[in-house]
Length: 459
Image (cartoon, helix red, strand yellow):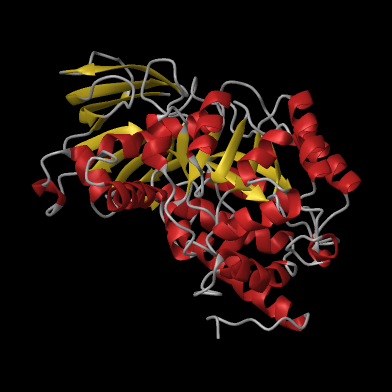
């Protein structure tokens, strides 16, 4: 396939912006870009980008897709309260529920400009089918590049952890299942649509032995490591009480800091913590809407960036960040940092970089994704900025980041059209929405059959 997008404002993230330029795609790669009229290319499809902004496709570096089926619950809860309320609901899930929830969540991401998404799945109730494969099947249907992280928990209430014992697994079965998932699905090739990470859930649900053995497994197989860390003050207190260390120091002791690791949230970091992340090359996934919804706090993103920590964006699970579009997290990140540090804390272009190159770095794919450069994968978002209202904003990148979600004219994943004119083209978006709603209905019904009382609010 050969495609030229012409007369378009290009925001490559790497290199200067080009007003009124062109972008050429050959196969699944970007073949060139530049200012002025597009070069001749016999046989190429030509797409007029007049009034549009082209950016790299957005990269989502933290999600829990199964949670699409449990939105709107425990609305006024802290993180620990929310988890206690929902663990037993999630224990009722099966592969069909996960597939429907994942398909709806991935379709929603695509419609917000996302071309690559991670997924942290860490609950595996026994006898419910292949939950990990269900998410992968959904990603293939929607057509997004997918980085599922095989999560795990082995530290239930009886061992001082937060989750009930019924939702945790044994150490040996976790390690066996994780190795099998990597062997079955991980594709390290440069054009890969599917890569697997290893991801014990958190310090309050995974034993030190699980953390250390998971790290050894991941490094033996050459895949990346992911976990939740420093999300709330409660977690700080839990780690100090249980381990005598704050979360980042505990991770350091376990060998869990390094350039192959990215941490979800990283809200409550000290100056020393930030320095450790910077010197070890450990990345962070910033999830501003979820952190706000749960009252967790505002991550020190501006300071992390200034001190050399890589930061990407994540929407987090839909149960703690209902219907959050990835494009909207750029705006949330910018506003949260400015509310905390002032109007120069984060620029529109820095927010765009968080959502693109920062995410690619978290996933170890900065050589293939995250910028518009010749040789990189043709993952491109084309946004309309000349609408009846958005045309009043002089700067296209400002319109994308500061304002509400812009209309998505085209979304390309490896040169393939996934969204065109605001509609999903790889699958029926209405069917995906219905599948997500049905997954939610079935999950709550199954939970109630198991004797779990499901409350919409806290009271």
